Amino acid sequence: WKDVLALTRFIVVARPGGTCQVPKLARVDLLSGLNIPISSSDIRQRLMRGEATPELPEAVRKYIDEHQLYVV
Image (cartoon, rainbow, N blue to C red; front, side, top):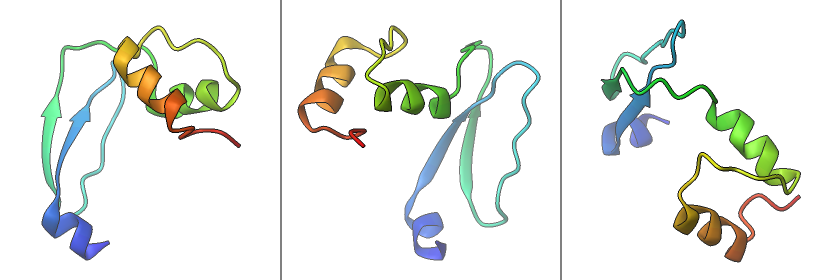
C-alpha cells in the first residue's frame, strides 16, 4: 500500500454531508460541488446485479460490460 501511495495521485469527490480521511502520505485532490448523489460502491453493486447505471458515460459502461469487470 505504501508503493500505491507513492505512485498515485488520488482524486476524491466529496458528496454532500460526507467526510474523508486522507492517509498521511497520500496525495489527494478533493473535488467539491459536483453533488453526485450516489457512491461508487452503489454503482459497483448495481453493475454486479446487471442493473442500469445512468450515471456512467456510455463508453465506460460498454468497456465494463465488454471486459466483464463486475461479473460475479
